[in-house]
Image 1 (cartoon, rainbow, N blue to C red):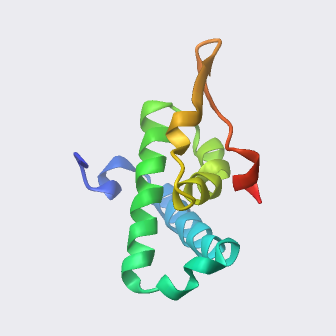
Image 2: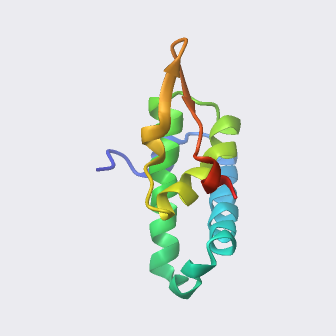
Image 3: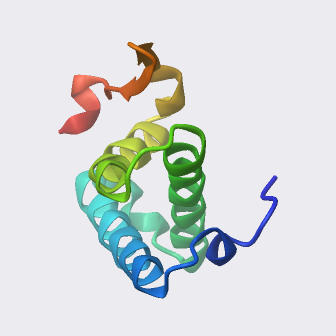
Length: 109
């Protein structure tokens, strides 16, 4: 369950704008890369994908303390992994005290 509205987690309006644009880009790309989902491009499907990205970003930025740049680079792969029925958070490992995530290679296509 979300403790705060998403916008309340980002206190910089410029960063919030970049996050929103990145989410839009990732959602559009996810429909291109997973054409079998094209029939579900209703507003609810877009909203569901936004929520998936929101949850992923909360984990990346909040729990893992990743920078925006690092999290941004992983958002598409996290969404595609989720759409393919995987759990991208299960792939997080600690190495030298740092959280690392590597998506399955078949998800990256």
